[in-house]
Image 1 (cartoon, helix red, strand yellow):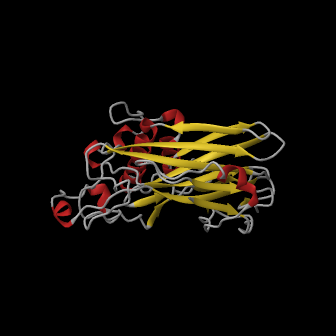
Image 2 (cartoon, rainbow, N blue to C red):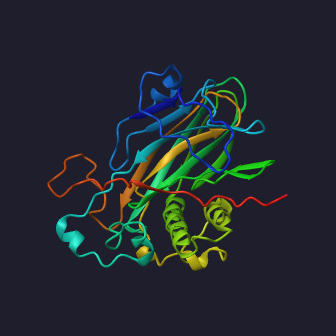
Image 3 (cartoon, rainbow, N blue to C red):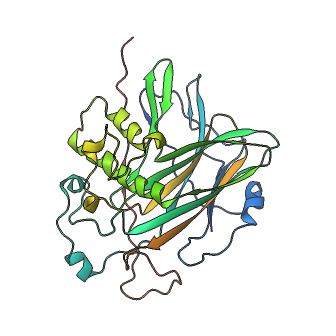
Length: 308
C-alpha cells in the first residue's frame, strides 16, 4: 500500500507567470486522518495493484494563493506493473515515430495504447462533518513523459488551473464515501490524449493558442478516440500504431477551501497481447523487468496574457 498525506508544503507567493503543480509527496504512514480508509485496504489480486492513497487535511498549506484565489492540492505517483522488452524484443521494434524522437525515443513504442486495458477504481472519502467539494485529478504518464499541468495567470483578474488528464469535480456529503470507476475507454483516451499534446508541442511549439489546445484535448467533454476524433485536434492525433500506452499517473486532489478528504485507487491492468504486463504473482524470471518510469515532464504552454 502506498500512503501519503500533505502536511508540510509551504504556500506560494503571487507568481508572475504560470506555476507548476505541487511536488509529489513523500510516502509516510500512520496518519490518523486516513485510518478509516486504510482499514479497507487489501492485497493485490491478479493484475490489480495494491491501493494507493493520498489525502489532505484542513491544515494543508495552499500551494497557490494570489489574494483572490487560493488552491490546495496534493499528489502522489502511481506506477503500473508494465514489463520492459527483453533484448530480442527491443531489437525487433521499428523506427521511432518522428514526434517521439523529440522526447528521446530511439524505437517505436513497446507497449501500445491498445495492448492493455486499464481500469482505475477510486474511493473518495469526506472525513468532515460538512459538505465538501473536491476535484479528482489524474495526470497520465507514458514511457517518455509525465504530464504536469499548472496554474495559468491569464490577467490581473483571472487565474485558471490547467486541466488534468482526468479532472472531475465531486460534491461530497458529510462523512460520505464515494466509489467510482474510470473505465478502459477513458484510460485508453488518456494515452491517446497525452500522445496528442506531445505532437502538438512538436508540430506547433509556438502556437499562441497552444495552452488552449492542450486543455481542449484533455477536457472530458471533448473525449476523442482514433476512430472518432474531436475536429479541433484531429490533425494532431498520431496513428494508433504510434501511440504508447499509459504506464502510470500522478493521482491528486484539489480544493479551494481547507478540508479533510482522501482518495484511494486501485489499478487493474489487463494484458491484451501478452508479455506487456509483469506477472501478478510477483515471480519474475530474468526477462521480467519493470518498464522504467519516465524522467521528463510535459507541461502546457503558458498562457499569453492579453493586454488590457
